Length: 534
Image 1: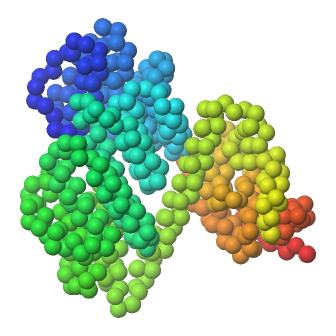
Image 2 (image 1 turned 45 degrees about the vertical axis):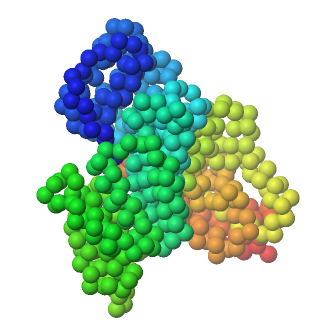
Image 3 (image 1 turned 90 degrees about the horizontal axis):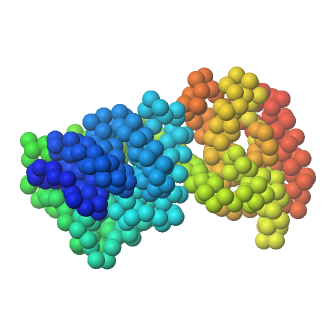
């Protein structure tokens, strides 16, 4: 994310509450633009707000202070976020609570953050808090923008785009002056995200998804006529647009070359879009079968794109270079890269499903719908319970589903996990396993926690081979989870019993799946056993 240019005017304390609150957001932007005087000005504003007893200004100044602390030391900004969160919760300001949680969720691994699970919980809570629609517009737009960026950090672009869209939907029709403090960054961030997302989709061959990104880009930029962008942002957006157009199928080599001629590698502030423009040339040249030129441009892009600042564009440049290299026949390196890409994509989809499940669980918690929760959902994992399972079976019978696949899963040596690490760790394991299972099912399927460490999944209208692939994917994903983040030395695996047949025979299917599960456990676990129904 870029930032607006700071003003050089010295700080003077605003004389009214609203001006003081807006000043806090202005100072937050000045910090990001490396204004050396902004941190001191934030402290003075905070002192003035406390002296005047302006609680909303205190919270806004604490937000600016958290931004300033993070600019100095990204992980070290956690204490400042803690002060903002404490104050916002004490004041009952749910929007500022959401801002603090969303910002903190982008900093897992700090000294007082136990795991990535905590960070996801922060982000889910922040997202759901914003659904109430409470709070001032500038606060809400800022909060949605913070949530969006946290989702993008996780490659959960679908959820990030939803948050950006919500932020933009709050734009006041009268375009107040303060809007310039938040709207340009939101437009810029959402536009940049389309390039990142499209870079990944293109590598996966998802051309329909790339077309959607191109359409969203045009919608966002087309609707932002009232936004005043800093000159550097406009330069970067032009480079992004050129690259995204090339990804979407346009021959933008000439346009990219023209933009490159205006940039100088010696100007480090303005130089970083150079790699994106070279990648646009490479894509265009490769599509036009100008392979020698495409190779040269791709290698130049690899040299100039920051793999940390723009990892998706960098990966696309590497992928393109590998594909050009393999024009005469797929190389082992290219095959390996594609396999790793598919695995990463599968993990991303699983993470997306897990986050959606966490959001659903957080909404249920917020709504205090205890009756429905206890009647049909498992309290710990958010999956269906036995009552929900029975209701689902009744529903699919009414829908005339002809066949179902059923698998019953049990954690291997789960008692040892509770004995060695404690029940809190055991609960964290169950929640994590439930996320993986939930991410593996469609809306028409049903994932159930039967009790303890036993789970079941019913796949509607699925044959055995489809179900087997689904089971293997679940088992592989569980094996790849970062269990060490929950407890040192922790390892988790599943045993699974699988069967299939008509839903009218569900009791027999359950018996068969249980018997298959018993065989899997007896054989040492970490496997799936299939039993065919008669």
